[in-house]
Amino acid sequence: MLDAIKEFDDLAVFSGKPAFSEKLHVGRPNIGDRNGLMEKINDVLDRRWLTNNGKYVQELERRLADLLGVRHCIAMCNATVALEITTRALGLKGEVIVPSFTFIATAHSLQWQEITPVFCDVDRETYNIDPACVEKMITPRTSGIIGVHLWGRPCDTDALRSIARRHNVKLLFDAAHAFGCSHNGQMIGGFGTAEVFSFHATKFFNTLEGGAVATNDDELAAKIRLMKNFGFAGYDNVVYIGTNGKMDEISAAMGLTGLESLDEFIAVNKRNYRKYKEEFASVSGIELVSYDEHEKNNYQYVVCEIDEQMCGVSRDNLMKVLHAENIIARRYFYPGCHRMEPYRSYFPHAGLLLPNTELLSGKVLSLPTGTAVSVEEIGKICRVIELAADNGPEVTKRLAAMEPDRIRV
Ligand code: T4K
Image (cartoon, rainbow, N blue to C red; front, side):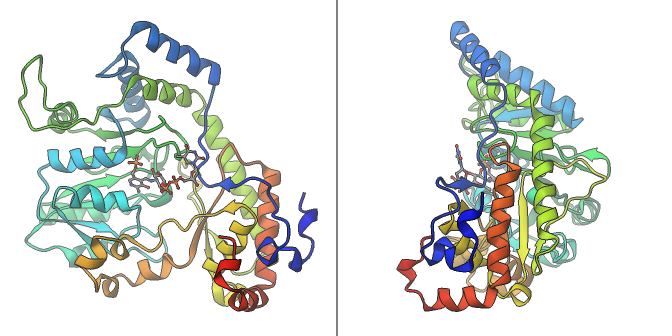
């Protein structure tokens, strides 16, 4: 029902009534079969086995390894700790090349261990780390490369593997967004030495908090299993430095429940994605980031690129318009890790080598999707965007004239 916004003047940013009475978020969790989940939680409580490699964690690990087609899948408390443990288990040190156009956890997982993240630019078309730039960033101190399959779209794994081989450095993937996606017909999870998934609440498949490492390397898997449990190899026997990276049983129960509905979650995401695509076909200057329909995709991020020249409104002004309507679109991943602390202070001129990151982080906007968002709501969101884009120069003029504190963001 967009009756409330028939006219440009009715936009909430100009004091009209918001299109939604409650906030519509990017990343509302998918829940799955609630009764099935409650049964599992009761079972956990009845058995009084809450964590430390419990029955549900083991079952989840088996099922994930099968689904991904890998020898090992190690469930973790979250993807950030999983990245820290994996890079440590691989002995990475000195410098590791990563994109700056990613969630801050990719960089922090390295810096936390005093490994320097060396920020590399992304490809203008794929938004993923650009192998040609990686090659230029390699130094004698480089010990690894971490590619990020941004929004679930695969990196150029072949080119990165060839660079890693030639320079004898490790190759990992931050696959936080890419659970359920394939590349060249192979499930993401089996590329590089290891791949790390996030199962955070905001991911389409979640374990409340959680993550996992997928690998075909037996030795690495054994080491990660030790390291995520303080290095214990048996009662009273610590053989390695470790930390606490374990997933608990209730998280695993949530994961097993979510797996039952995985196809349904993806189908809803795809339906939503198609609705946005259909709506944006007639809006000039707004383009949806596409997915390769020949591969498996999870469609969990609906990202659009805003061409300010064409629609007359900038990404940031469009976001102000949307937020005022209670549509909480997000600028993932603005402004790029290199512009956040501590990296901004460490490498104040990093942006000079990151032209595409600088450009793209100023253009993209993630829109609400998932099972909490209906097709009708997407229609409503798109009407607001269309109204703003059709009146781009006027929106820009009026927002510029307003006092910043009058803009409800
Ligand atoms: N690598 C990459 C490339 C990543 O994107 C991430 C995480 C990681 C590594 C690390 O993974 P984890 O260590 O988290 O497993 C969110 C998530 O917290 C984060 O997991 C995710 N990426 C990132 C892309 O998004 P924020 O700071 O934007 O979260 P927040 O709290 O603003 O939540 C987003 C929206 O979701 C909110 O507007 C409200 C809604 N929400 C959130 C939660 C937690 C709900 O409706 N219910 C909820 O329970 O980072």
